[in-house]
Length: 208
Image (cartoon, rainbow, N blue to C red; front, side, top):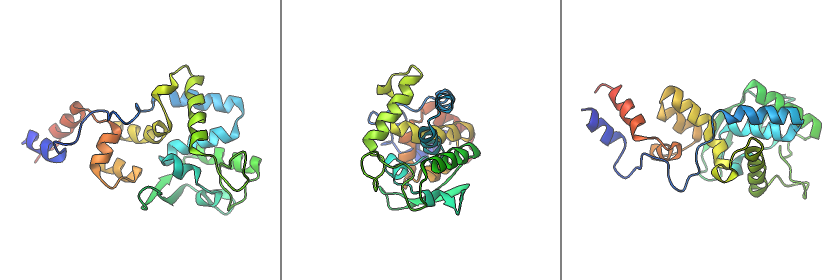
């Protein structure tokens, strides 16, 4: 019965290992080292970007398209926000932790960002936001700053960080699927790079 559940829950065409097209998952302890470096370095923008990237679990294009009004209520940074995903056209909600709200508020105040303006404006055009290439370079600098190989991590690593933590602690795939805004559970399985051992453990703990 256990193996039957396993086969039905994870169809044969799903590969229960890290997808070759997906970069390795974010180091789950390295995030603290990067956050401390950004705090000590006094980079308000990068600290806000880093914290919001982890909390929101948004794709880079959606993260960079955020305007201040998307994450605020009046002059206060909101505890929760909802955005429409560019890739799927579906809405997804996310929470902003206290440290993220403080970082975003500090950056918005320092940069004097208007409510309707992009939260992370580009350097060349006032009306534009950071590009995905610029974001990728920023993430690469974070990774190398703590001695890791930038080729092993990328912007999707930021998106996966909190999702991976939630999965490890709860083994609740459906919850992670909702938080990532995936339309199919199969996408979440591939995205997290779930191992066969994890899937079997879940099956053993489930009674039919």
